[in-house]
Length: 328
Ligand code: UDP
Ligand code: MG
Image (cartoon, rainbow, N blue to C red; front, side, top):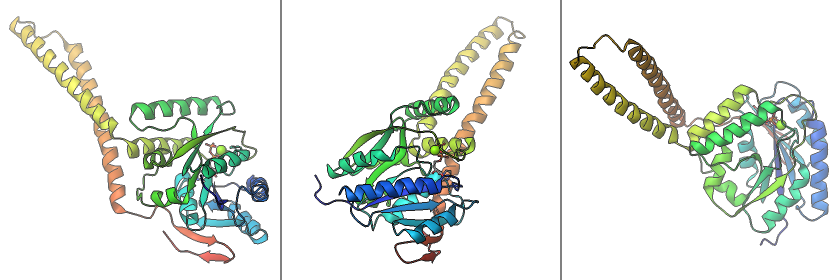
């Protein structure tokens, strides 16, 4: 159990969200005020908008809103670094000021009323609280199927992720400090955070439709996330390759013995189709498995460079106006 009302920082990644950001900030600021009034969050709680290199007026909106309201802070990336890096930046930059941080999408598809439950779990002593969506009814059929397939695949491939856990989650300052010690560039927070341990719990929340704008998660970004998820959390695919490779070796041995018997019986020309089929199959498998190994080597290569995961162009931070570039 915790005694002190926590200072809460709410982090929202924003990528080209000009259509809905104002409305979302209205809702969030109102909710934050209600939490403060209800003594569930401490005065000095903030909303941190991370502009992930938007090409529209997102940053102008953030700057405008923070000028009129000290509860709104802003961080602007030098370019688009992706959703995972945006929430990471928001969390890491907030960790010295906040007692706990909640990340939520800018479209507020996740129900903000669940914040009470998140904070209640924090007060019970949890350092990590996962938001899990109640259902996927509001998703388009395509998204629903791909999401389900993704979680199944992740499980088979050895990366245990809480199904339907969005990046709507609370971390305490202690958990954030632990997270800061993970230097990886291939970031998949949904898989990474459970590996940190700590007392954790789940909060269920409803999912709504996006009220404006398009989904910023293009198919390419989604595939990238899935690939990062698998390659950063597990080497099971490499083990599967070895298993399949061994199976093919045994098969080859059997075929070799069979063809030796055929040869001994003078039936050498037969089996042309089998030969071609096997050639194609083994050639294909070879390419695929080499590619997969290459994928891991490539990811390892990126990690060895230790490049910054994001670069901050400017920031609006607690009464200090717009701060120019200080990078991470
Ligand atoms: N987002 C981001 N960078 C990106 C893509 C998305 O910061 O490159 C943000 C986006 O602004 C939103 C959140 O990530 O706050 C989730 O995106 P979206 O709602 O488009 O995804 P969906 O709900 O369709 O999965
Ligand atoms: Mg969304």
